Image 1 (spheres, rainbow, N blue to C red):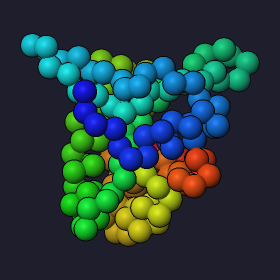
Image 2 (cartoon, one colour):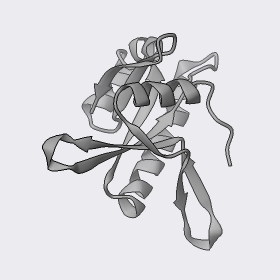
Image 3 (tube, rainbow, N blue to C red):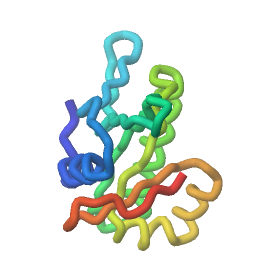
Image 4 (cartoon, rainbow, N blue to C red):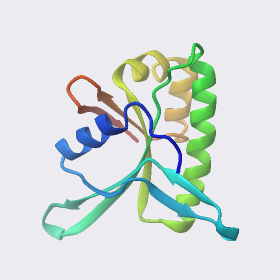
Length: 139
């Protein structure tokens, strides 16, 4: 199993505060020939009076390298791969990339990150690491 991101527990706590129940930690995608990939978290919550559940998968990225663009390139590649595989194996899950509010402002309000959001490549959630709270959902 891969190492957990430095914000793993922070994001988990923020999702729980936001009304989500953890269904997977991590969410395993089982591939042919015994290979596995792991999305950091799977969560669910009831939708109003319909008693249906909404399911999300969350990949957490801290963007700690000297180059935000290198971190972005890696995060996008991983997000796209996971998103396509989730559509195949967990079609009821929507994938989000979780980043701190600082990263959202510094990377995803700039042209490269904004283009990914505007073109529907990435769905994003930002969080406040000190308060362990979700700040913004962007689909």
